Picture 1 (cartoon, rainbow, N blue to C red):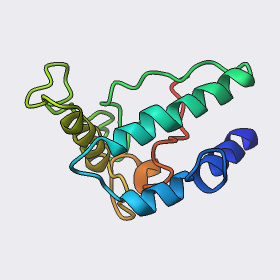
Picture 2: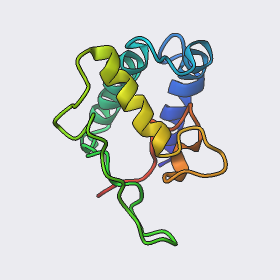
Picture 3: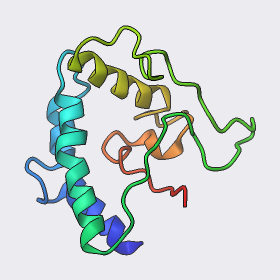
Length: 138
């Protein structure tokens, strides 16, 4: 576990990628008009994570269906949040990569991205580290 934490710390604060994720978030914020958000997370960070897992003979990343908000029931007992139609497979209203990027980003916001007070997923409270959820479905 400490190796994973070290690797993620290197992605967020170190020099594994340039600029590191912290600096990228600071300079880009919440891109609402382009594909920078999805490019950073899918094109830059995901391959680094997959490569690191492979180098340690770890299993590949699990596909997340976007609905599971907690691996355990909270006080409300709710563990899922229905997908919006923009991400449910019909992609209603999605006609460009930029719209898809905004829909992905908004999904994380809906789950509590960057919200220090509330949010369905407590690990999403840090905008810099949210994408590296520490929970496992294994």
